[in-house]
Amino acid sequence: MSGFCGRCGRALSTEPAHVDCAAALELEPPRYCTQCGRRMKVQVVPTGWSATCVEHGALSS
Amino acid sequence: MTDILEFARAQVLDRGVGLDEVAVLEILRLPDERIADALQLAHEVRMRWCGPEVEVEGIVSLKTGGCPEDCHFCSQSGLFSSPVRAVWLDIPSLVEAAKQTAATGATEFCIVAAVRGPDARLMAQMREGVQAIKEAVDINVAASLGMLTQEQVDELVEMGVHRYNHNLETCRTYFPNVVTTHSWEERWGTLKMVRDSGMEVCCGGILGLGETVEQRAEFAVQLAELDPHEVPLNFLNPRPGTPLEDQPVLDPKDALRAIAAFRLAMPRTIIRYAGGREITLGDLGTRDGLLGGVNAVIVGNYLTTLGRPATQDLELLAELKMPVKALSATL
Image (tube, rainbow over all chains, first blue to last red; front, side):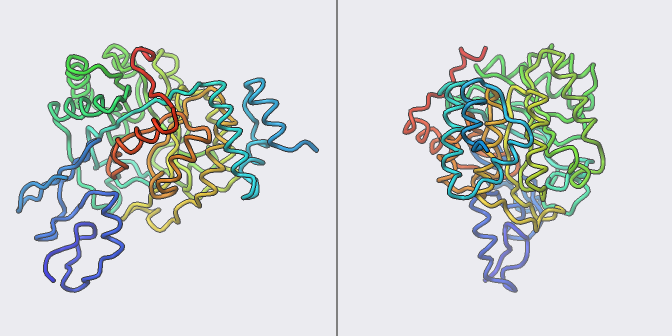
């Protein structure tokens, strides 16, 4: 498995079972880019969220 | 010895007088098998002294993260190793958020900033944002910008901000365990200025910060003494990187006791379900609270975390035959 956990930013290759993080992401937006693990700028609004990684661009709900 | 719920029925339901600290503590200590009775009484009190309407609100963060304060529950403090990065919302996005909030039927839209108090840049952003919202959307605009000066209070009134949120967060005796960069009294001072300005006062806090039940009772009566228009009740959602990240989530039975107790302390106040209800009480808890004294909800997402979709809460209100408070009734 490659990539990074969107909640804690750790590499999924070393810790593949981020069960708690996956559950938490039901009620919070990702804070880390899943491609590079960088911390993202995240804006939450009442009906959604958007996140921006300086390297990989924007994501949204 | 009179049973506490019989006593509360006579004093709060019949006469509209809130419980004192000793009586609130008794409610908070009720055995499990009496929680349903307490919630039922709290619901009757709410229906009698507030009515069946539910006030619906959306909130948005205008300035997220990078706060100089050390509120131990908050992921937006710049003093902790939280993953939340500083970001500003632009005006078009703010207006769009207000439109989306109004589309749910909400009458309140609260603009929040993670700051000790507003600086000139934030006040300018507020002025532009409030004006743009008022030109585009029929919704009441509230604000939560930390501690204010008298000049800033006056400026917010002049902008047309109708309600100001500034949570005391917890009781006076426990506050220094939660925040060290400013005092409970400084917050109280801002609240008094807001009250004197004519803006509606919105002041609540967070339950489950590690306070004792005695301190929870102390908090309820301190809020009652302030007599705010609205009390938002949050339940701690422990955030990564904060000093309270390992604090256990509040026991749902204690959360329900607190909902009933706060309603019995403040029979006429808007009590709003705010952050943390999903993680503390789950979906069923929203129903229990609305049938236990709560008469307002934040719908949709919170400032840095996500809530239930607004449609779920609105469908529940329809099922419970609780009308959403109309904008015309609040202006």
